[in-house]
Amino acid sequence: RPGSTERLLEGLRDRGARATFFLIGEQVQIYPELVQMIGAEGHQVGNHTWGHVSLQDLDTAKALAEVERTDVLLQKILGPGAYWVRPPYGRVDKSVLQQLSVPVIKWSVDPRDWESRNTQAVVDAVMETVTDGSIILLHDIYETSVEAALELIDLLEPQGYRFVTVEQLLRIKGIEPQAGTAYRYA
Image (cartoon, rainbow, N blue to C red; front, side):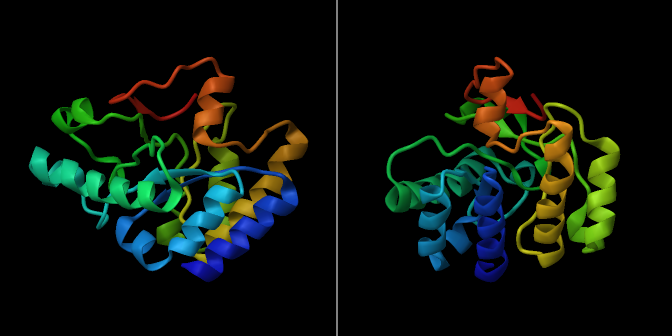
């Protein structure tokens, strides 16, 4: 949603932090200017399929079409690039995974922000489980998640954590990302 995403972008900018935004094609189509803003501000843009369907519930051709349709639109808006994939619900079968031409990103910290929609609950859940190299899953469609993300940066940076894109995180940790490989942490 534009309002909460713009608020997150502002907070990230103010803190000098970076993030990875996995975008749903249907939403990219509606908000291309917001997608351009995300990319222009140095954040990684990734592919979260066209319609946020479980790739594991589709046959391989349909699953790949969900990714391809979004990839084509991202290329049109942002230009050529490798738009890494985060499968909805973290579900993707091996046959689809092997045919993807980019890395697949999952997560190691899931505070279930979509369920609680409670800023403090999200902050507490992340603080209990975050470690060096964690990939934290949050959804910027919820104001509570945006507030939690910014609060987490303020709490964790003094402890030595840096907020970078997933691609940067993997490279910092000496991991050379491979196409068709799923990563949960670095």
